[in-house]
Length: 214
Picture (tube, rainbow, N blue to C red):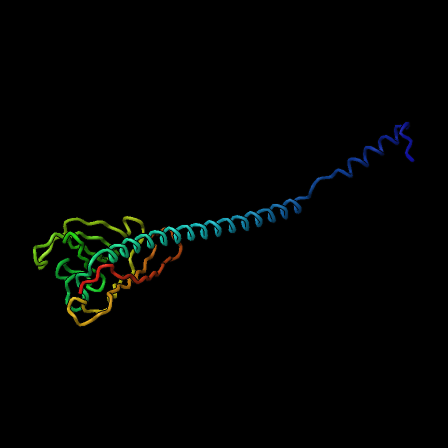
């Protein structure tokens, strides 16, 4: 037991305390700093990866919502209108009335008031067209146009669009008793340069017109 009443014992006690409070060495500081930097890099990598996945998920969901909305617009018009051209890939009515477009990527519908409308894809852009036609619909001009999908509009492009109409002959010709139906095939893709990888959706639906002309 140390006798703290003596001066020598006090000095020895102070020296022992100082020796027990020695700091970190330079090597220990370097190792600690290196480990801290590694931990910081790992955490940053996890955060960046999570942010990319979150951005991709948000972009995919937004594109899916927009594509489903456009698909519902087309399906609603087909249900309520009359199919004007049952085989546009052969007769070429879409190309003849709308100009230089892919005939397979177009559908013409006749509304109850006699107006002719069209859904058409051109240069990865989907348009809803209201036409102003003469009495026999032999010549038409575009009276109004609404862009539904476009890179400059909602950062989405149309990669593929097709309207498959069955039967390919109108029931009014008397050669078929089948109720006409249209299968819409639509593939869209995110065109934003901010996305690290391409995102696309392919949707398909089949719709029957409520109007049966025999």
